[in-house]
Image: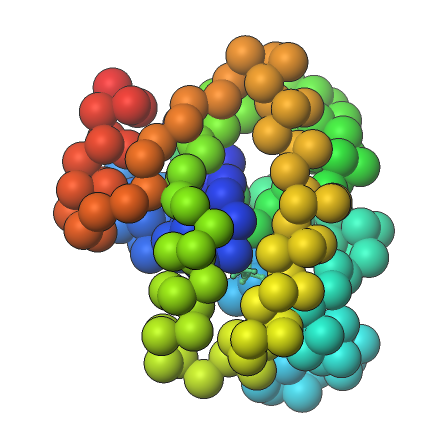
Length: 184
Ligand code: ADP
């Protein structure tokens, strides 16, 4: 099962992706986690993207696509995966499709976590994991970028008929139950 977990910043993608990973025993590929790990370890990639993440902007499409394509070629991904934070622009979605087609595979489900904007901001500002992009101004910037650059990705997959909307308000377990029901 190849899943895209989609939604605005603060929708709970990371939390639900981890639960899906454990439940279906398939890997969770989070581009945000990859970037944060590289920043922490001060790699070349980390140095290149640090100021971009700090500003709440998007890493260039080519950089992200190269990373994801490299990763998806690994044998670990043969039996399915959960993409979290990717694709985040229409060109990224097109590049992903091109790659998957060349491999004779495809995305099975695009899960959209639906959360009202007010709740998103409250959640991000109250989570205490020390992310440098979680300040009020950065959150506003990330939501603006989401609306402008990322939301069109939803329509791209709607046209393909792959979108399943899941109510992302409730307890972690409630939301996970809804996701499992949707996938059945
Ligand atoms: P959130 O969904 O809360 O914004 P993520 O962990 O998915 O958090 O992403 C954090 C940051 O990493 C983004 O604001 C962006 O700078 C960068 N990033 C992650 N994934 C991508 C992507 N697919 N394309 C461009 N930039 C990305």
